[in-house]
Length: 337
Image (tube, rainbow, N blue to C red; front, top):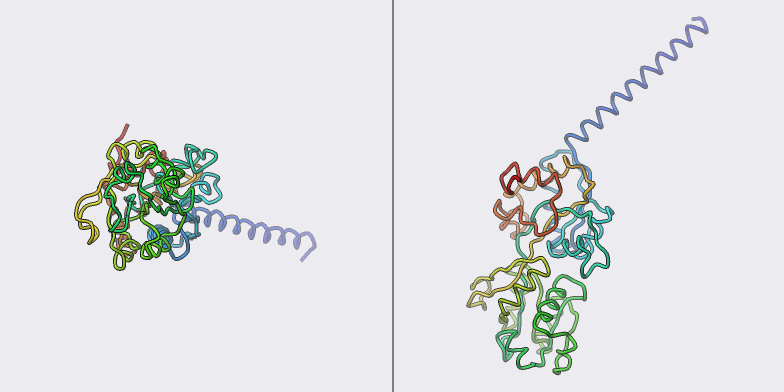
């Protein structure tokens, strides 16, 4: 073969290989775009209920889109909205209350994260529950404040969702932590397990947090503690709900063995949030995957059993992502405008 013919043959071979490579690359991109999703969801502390919730959502997407790679990372209720708002992580789970606080730049956030968007409800309701030892001398917060009772109050770390709710409720009553100290009481920032241990030792009187009903921590504590709910003023609850972007609701009697009558309170759902720049089609498919897997999710954690068509779209005040909005409108879960 002449040098010229050899050169032409070599060029043809190389061109064919490059063309085949380009076709394979285009094909791979096409399949990846239409059939699979590769992303990350930030959830809760490793081993906690929220990590289970997040993995359940991730697996729902994997089930609907075979070959998808959905990574779950640990996070926190307050931290997650900031991570999503800066697009550090595209998806996350948080309370609707804290997501809206991040979106609008209110406590505990020092700046607004306007790029946060909502997808759907994950866990419909986390109720604020004000629990006291059974032997405290008051049954309502109104009574305790009127008497200036020396309350030994336990709350979570400052800036946590439950602590913000507790402080907001007290503020509507015109009471601060400093006031409680001046009455001879105390305010301690403690974890839930430590709080109930100290309750059993008669060193804590009262604690408040937003948790599921029934809460496993409260159920466990009630086996060794005589507990009771402390009621709160309806007008106070209404004002707190408005300011924090929450809803008013009721914990029904019988939810715990020691609860003998309904208790009014405020609640917030846990929602899936996403950065606004995540493609509309991807978010549409994620929303659809969760919707199509209610039955599966109910086997993952008992809290998912409360998720339904009725509450799936009740995400609070954070704007919906266009992809989620498109799916929810198609299913008639939100009105067409």
